[in-house]
Image 1 (spheres, rainbow, N blue to C red):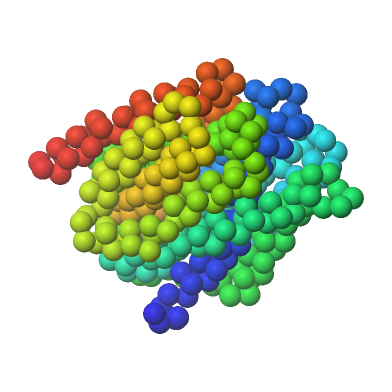
Image 2: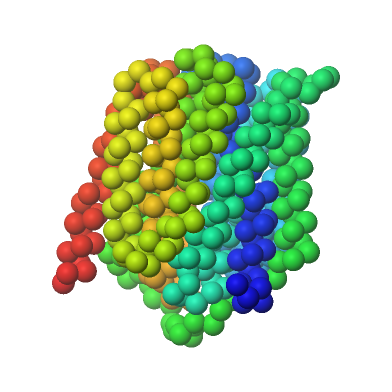
Length: 392
């Protein structure tokens, strides 16, 4: 790989290895910390849901900001915000303040909205035919984050002289600081000149009538919302309700995040070989399997199998949806389409995460599975609609 041609991809991959640790640390510990300091167990997963609400609320501002000041300035602002939020979360736990912890989770979500723009920066920097493989390569950073994030959260969960889990969020701040330095020193704004670079921007109504764009958004949004619903529920269900150890819960979450990103070694090539729609359909099938494995009263192996199939299914749906999205807009339209896409994706993800604590408290783990299935089946008519439009 020629460094000069793929500089953006390489730099953002390294930055994401450390920056992306924020998400798994909060996923692992958000519900557990919430269960300890929230007024009621019903509110235990609220910090994770608020984090995702923070993502959705910042997607449009993040995209708008970067359209004005450039990607580099936007990424640095977002990462600096995350470092502050990590320290604020540690302070909230130290003070046993659920409100402060939720505010910190919201700000971490704001940062993740900036982090999600990494994939679009990469897509803008390479030829169109290279986008699936380059996005797959970028997503491999999630493997490092999957190993590093929960490990930092677990190892620093108990620090002498501090309340439990304060050290975990100080560790998060350290990881984010490394990402900030990588971006500051090595990242440069870069855009590959494409054929439609000077084409006029179309009205939003015309853009969003495209069946390809509808399938792209639906795949990513539904995949993300189901993943968030089940992933958010798992630490609380395993550790607090079924009394599995924190080590066992950490292994399941790590396995899940690895399953989200290890397929990126080959999913970009699979898209090139079989086509993006078949990969999206495969992701749908894997999500169905995930739900049936998790149904009932799960033991450790059931949690593990559910979260592994969930991770691979998410990878296919999200990478496939993102690839389709980049094929559905012109260069002049990219910021507004990317912003609206991420708002819809993470808005629906927030709904899934907000539902997790309520469903667990009211009807248990099986309620989570029951809620996930009809949401997933919403993809079926979208498949038929996009297929008929292509045939015509």
